[in-house]
Structures are given as C-alpha cells and as structure tokens.
Length: 292
Image (cartoon, rainbow, N blue to C red; front, side, top):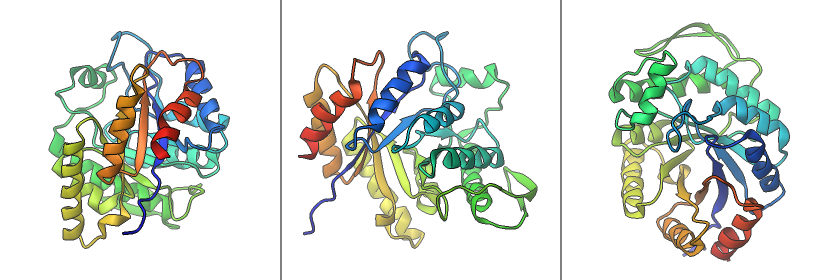
C-alpha cells in the first residue's frame, strides 16, 4: 500500500467572547509556524456559547483584516452561512479576500444553522434575516455554489433564474487570484448537504468528536460521488476537532483516529481564553507528536 499522506493541520479561532487583538496575536504567531498550514474563523452574528450578550465579530470583515496581517496561512470561514448573504455579494466578498491575501482563500460555505440551535436561531430575527426551512436552505446552497463559481470564472455577464436566486446581468470583477477559483469547502453532515458536497466541493468538513459517525458520513459521501460520476478521492476530507489544553493526549488520540478514518485535513479548535503562545504550544504538543 502507498504511504498515508501527511495530514494538513490548521487552527480555528471562533471570533466570539474574545478581543480582536487576541485573535490577531494567535494568527500572527501561527503564520510563522510552518506546521500550521491554515487558519479559520466561524460565521455567526451573535454568541452561540458563553455570555449571550458578549462580543462576536462579523466573519468576512475580520477575515479580510487578518488576510492583510498574514503572509503564508491559507484562511477561510468554517463555514459561511449561506443564509446571511446573497450569493453574488458573497462571491464579491470572497474574491476581494482572495486578492487581499494574495490567493490564500479556502472558500468555506454551508447551509446555515438549524432551528435546534436556539442561540444561533435568534440571530436571524435580531438582524432582520429570513429563516426558511432546512430543505429550502439546502436548495439555496446548491444554487449559490453554482452562481459563485460562475461569477469567479465567466468573462461575460449572465442571467440566472433559479428556484431560490435570480440574477440579471451578473458579472464578477475582479476575479479571484486563484485559478480556476479558490477551493470550495462545504461543511455539514446531513445527507442532503452531502449531495451538494458531491456536486460542488473540493473539500468537505464535518464537526468532529464522534469519529465513527464522521466515517459513516464519509462513506455516504463516497456513494453520492459514485452516483454523480465523480471520483470520491477528489474531495479532501476535513474534520474540526476541539483542542484540550489540559489533556493534549486526548486531542492527539482523536486526531489519530480521524486520520485513520481518512480525514487528512485537520482543523484544531482553540477555545478562549487563549494561553500564552498557544500556536507554538499546538505545534509542539499536538501537531509534531501526532505527525511524527
């Protein structure tokens, strides 16, 4: 058998219950550490953990700021809620960040929060955003992926008449730096979302913890790829795993199990408050010992 490729490691800093300068410090440190290859924010408008009235930064504007403050890290949102922004506007924002970063964007997107998360559900009413059922949101996600990719690649204006989105004279300029377009990462675990992944994604991410469930969802994605006539190996399997500062051995064990299950793109979630030199600690205590 060929050797298993070395996994790719990144960090995720949820921009909530934290100060901008703390996030910036962690990203600047990570940018100097080759073992940390990518860095991520999440996309919520209000806290979904901790103090419900605490601070939460908007993901794309913060990502643009961090893109300008780093030089090497690939970066993105894990994942953008397709419910928050019209897809043509999102395509423009993402192209801008790809230009600002010099071509380092991984474009993460998902269907958006479900009603079972009440702290996430409230942000729609609080910001005047419509909240449709999950079937609607998955259909909207599929159309959004098509629209965004066309805006990034097509040289002439086009019209789009879908079930969920309608555009007239749509055109994107500037284009992203990356060709043909930034890698598309779709996050989610439902069967409906996995069908969208099989059609549109370069990477698929699932929140970790239950590795057996993640492996079964990966197998289901293989099946959907086969049905769509796509090689499942063309979709990188990504997993988000929380870091335990007190029990790094547990984190290392979870990473090993995920890698054994075929997940080669590891996103390590860092909880706040961040310890001093947390990026260096992650590289030394988690990544180097797991990858060795």
